[in-house]
Length: 237
Image 1: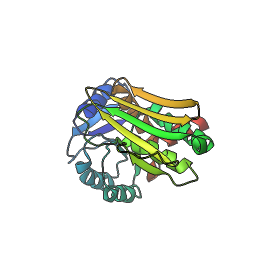
Image 2 (image 1 turned 180 degrees about the vertical axis):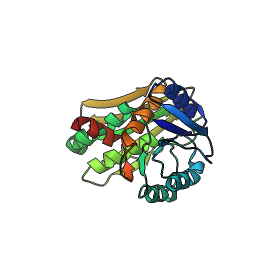
Image 3 (image 1 turned 90 degrees about the vertical axis):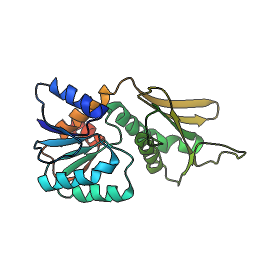
Image 4 (image 1 turned 60 degrees about the vertical axis):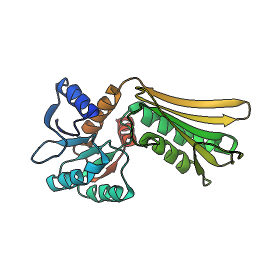
């Protein structure tokens, strides 16, 4: 498997290091701007400002693409959808297999519990993270909203004097130190709390997940894929 890495930051370097230690992986490109790199797939851990040119490159070269960058606009999302008509694109706000299993769990339990439980989402990251809430937190909220038959109201943080509304989803962000990433979903009922939590101890889990996603995406038809598709593919085997 020949991989082009787009983004030479901390995650890009970690994927390069992890890939080079994998006998079935060859890194054929490692850059912030792609010009003449060739390979079986592109893994992107760059910055949302670089996505437009990356999408053009992927489409023009017919190279499958994994996008792990977050913080992009609705306009870029539309361009991602257009690119996915030509090549397979796997879109994920978090490459951790554990986080994506958390989403799967929410899809199953939220429809059962939402009516009698208040739902709060808490995310924690290092002090250098720019976007807030995290892309992963937004995905968790989206999963919760899709799993609720009633319309939910997103409440970012809390201040002042106002009672919590029944159909709110509280969303809270913390930034400090070197926290790799922590996401919690609390379902708070009468006299009990159910908490589902994922803590990343290092960024290596994202590199492992990205390589797993690359193995899955190569050879797929054009379209948008998610990490959930990887789990479903494994269940079918």
